[in-house]
Length: 446
Image (tube, rainbow, N blue to C red; front, top):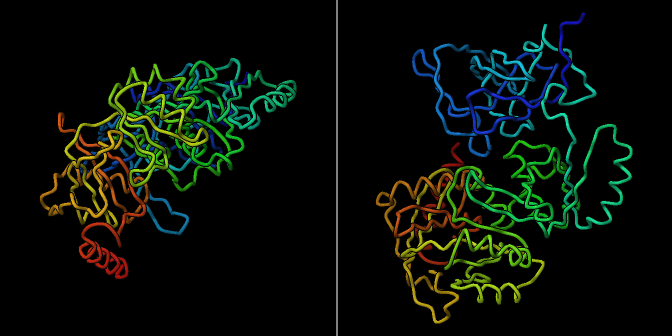
């Protein structure tokens, strides 16, 4: 009798007592000797190793610091031939109904499809891999739900019925139009809901296919960012690498990396109107209603009641993405100029009066009459650190980061990470030119 269990090329596994999620996907790789797991903040102090499992940008990240005096040190060669030090720790992992203990290499797997990799040292004398199948050891053996996000769900459904007859597995296909996807951006509790399927979270499906994404780049890239955060399989993988074009994808990137932004809901205007009861129940009035591509105060409104919100929704372009955002009471906002990974300039724009009640939340009049430069050493460290972290996660080496502080609670939020931070316009151009020149000099000396 063969004592080895059969295992698929991917499996749902669990780390007993660790992490937020009960199950997560793991890649079974017979081409790798060692097993590895996504980890961050890895640091050795004398005979103790400190580390955090996963990292901001993963739904499994808890921020909990683990420590152990039982670890191994190894070295690996990168694709460029450089040698890198890696650490190995002993972890308990549940596969099927059995809990195993094994060595795992701590590694940055932020750009890998799966946060955990199971190598052949772990598999030896335990499992035989069936490379043609998945999830053989997983408890999730029922119907596989596949979500297809498309511009033409009805026509796609007809095709999928034909495909379903040819599936060897039990597959239930669900289709949804991009216009029925609601983005609820709320830090680590962020959710993307398929409102055509009872507001089911898109990460609840076994697999997602983001179709026709060329015509819906912002929704598609934001969906991809969210599914990466949830470590859920999807295609096309082209969407892993994108340039943020609006506040929608920017907010998703920031929120899932632990950067505070005001609570926001996003979608097409008519979907927001349908979901208004839920949204206003969460955010309340007053609120901000703005286009995802809003810039310099355009398409950006302060709303104090439902009647005004309904009127605005009916007037804005129906095929543009809009955001309903919690209003943060404030005395103005900070613009932090970040060069590289350093905050080098800070300008505070105080509150100013507006004749239009729909614009009373804006603090950026033309000419910069309300702008005051703040010595960087006088800037509250929390504001400076938040701005730098936001620019790093957005991969914007030269950025103007807008930070707002709640005058009631003192909590700080990111409003925007500008990739075009008005270097040659606005207030204090000479100072910006000085800091820009210093940054360029520094980079050229590298």
